Image: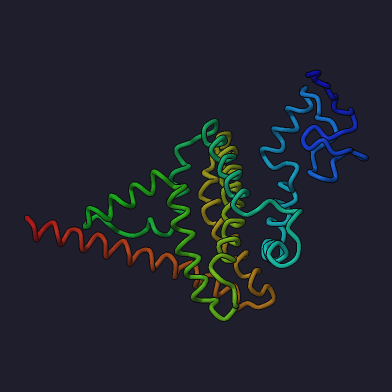
Length: 259
């Protein structure tokens, strides 16, 4: 039996073999021709990995100037110009990790601790409580996530009449947290070259940014909105403090009871 060999036409899709009339296949979306692998391709791939082509700088600029409006626009109107909140937080964390690796100073941990109200809790009398807080100090990325959870609960309680659910508040805090991490990254670089402890300024400035962003998100024209933002922040800190206090108190009571 004679086998007849057929050759794919050069205008046919390499994936589904449908005829391509333009640059992409109308059937499966596959491109007519693949880009040549060269330095331009590699640089584009790196840029895409860091979301440069997906609105990184646009997202940062909007969050620095009008954070509340930017997040509301992302939630209710149009999202293609912005990086998604979780991706934004991840890439900002990567940037900080790189900056901290090359420009690390002894002031970084102090600024992180001062920036987190949960670390003001006096835990010297409760061994387990002290151990938990010390672990969080050494793992500030995780502690930041835990901080965000309690602040989100605080926001949900204080702004309960706003109609926003916890997931929406989570999106807001991801964007705010990303900018705060970038601020810390910049401060880490500057701190490496100057004598003044600029990271102390960051610790206060980032909290003000957090409160300003939350207040703007809910109602930027009302002073009460910013007052509620302050209450939300400290309510979250208080709830976390009570939880850690109860854990430490109960655990030490059990240890003393057993011994």
